[in-house]
Image (cartoon, rainbow, N blue to C red):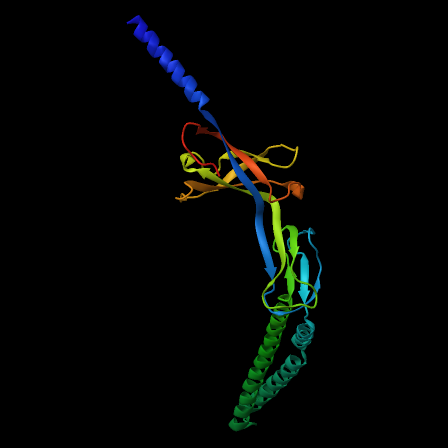
Amino acid sequence: MYNASKMSLLVLLFSNELLAQTQEPAQLNCRIEPSITVEMSSAVEGVISEVLVDKNAVIKKGDVLARLDAGLEAATAELRRVQSELTSDVQSQQLALEFSERSLTRVKDLYDKKAASFSELDKLKTEHAIAQQQLRQALDRKRQAELEYKRALADLQRRTLVSPIDGVVVERLKEPGEHIDFEPVLKLAKLDPLRVEVYAPASLYGKVKAGMKANVIPELGADSRSYSAEVTLVDQVIDGPSNTFGIRLAFANPGNRLPSGLKCRVTFEGVTLNLLEPRTLP
């Protein structure tokens, strides 16, 4: 009996030791990519007049990066601006209305004193109503001119390419003088934060979840520093042929100190792999 218990204990200890030896931290291969990549194109076709940035330029959201030729649109916008600021038509109709009101008041007084006919009063009432209508039309024309000016400005602004992100210029695809028809002019990338793409074996499915912390080690020469990252997305579908699923992480990269495109290794806190389980690491 004693020998049986001792043997069971030895088997248990051996099993635990074997299990510990067959477990390792889940270290997977990965790739570091920009968090956002943008191929900038124009909303309208035209001829490029200038490109203000070159490859590797650091850009901020809202920076003007390129312009299309916009001589006609600029002239149209200036014309609409002048038209929107004209007030002579409104002032003229305002004076006509004020004169009509004074005339109508005088004739009303005379009509009350039996010194003017009803036809005269009716005529001036009609003229007053027409003057009111003409003033409203003048105000409508001014409002229309203001809206046409805004539309001309919007058309002019569509010929200016403005950066939608903070980042760097990856590639300059067009030069001044080239005609574009919605083709990309510049390729931009946002490098802070960086994105990490991982393909994990199906055995880890359910163990890695969004919000989990991980350590990313870029393969950058002798520099083997690790970076703290957070899982932002876990695929809901496993790829059958490779028996893997995708994981996406993100980590801060202030000052763009790390380049994108690096290979890396990633380990997840508290997640291990079973060495005895057949698997294919990506």
